[in-house]
Structure formats: structure tokens, C-alpha cells
Image (cartoon, rainbow, N blue to C red; front, side):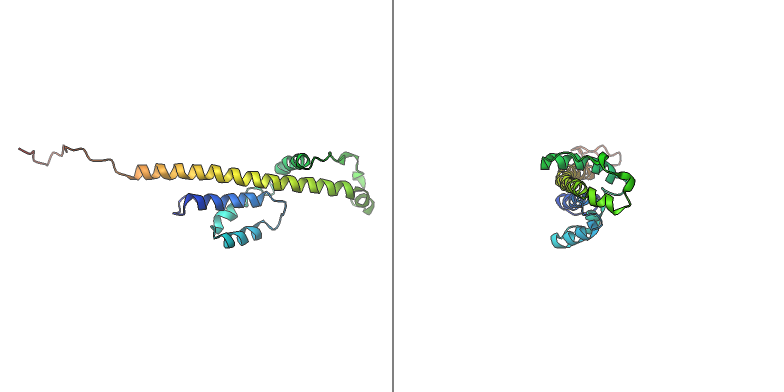
Length: 162
């Protein structure tokens, strides 16, 4: 991602779009969406797929813990009382019949929060990565330019001008 000759804008857009996709609640479709958009937008497929790995099974819990309250704020919804549900009957049809409205609202709040985080994370990733890539490439270009030779060389094998 860093060592290629692609413009920094393309690299940042590819990875940021992958990050944005990883935050969507469309779990299981991230790679399909990423590759489809990579082909349509002519972005780097590897960078966009790497971006989709940001939200993974290890990070989904903490991300969801942020997404659910954010979804409630965006929707101006009340917090569902999930502690009042009959969790002892989780594997019975009666649980799901009674819990359906609460679970549906929680799912909508979570999905809204995930989409909100998707937009925020994608935009922040693009801005931060673009700035970092430009600084990195400017430093690399500056270090690749040889220092200018002094006007008067002090080479011991060179004869002095008279």
C-alpha cells in the first residue's frame, strides 16, 4: 500500500472505502461490496480489501458498543429494556414472539449507528491517510535528492586552478 507508485489520493481512497465498508452492518457482504466498488471505481483491490479487515470478529463487539448508542442518538429513540426480556426462554418460540419488537428496534438502532460510523470512519481514514502518505512521500523525495556539490571542490586529486 505504501510502496507503490499510485497517487496518494488513490491509495487513501481505496483503503478508506474499505474501512467505510467494514463499518457497515452488511456483515458477510463486505468483500463482495468492496470488490464490486473497486472494479467500478477503478481502485486498488488489495487496498480496499485490507480496509475491510478493520472491523472483524475481534473488533465487532467494541464497535457495536459504540454503534448502538450512536444509533439511538441519530434516531432519537429510547433505549430498549433488554434486561427485562425472558432470557431463560431464549431457545423457545415464545421468547422470540415476545421479544420481536424490542429486538427489531435494537437492530435498527445498531444498523443506523454502524452506517453512521461507516461514514465517519471512512472520511477520517481518507483525510488522515492522505496527509500521512503525502508527508511520507515528500520526505522520501527529499532524501532521494543528492546534496548540491559545493562550488569549490576539495578533491585531493584535483589540481588547483592558477
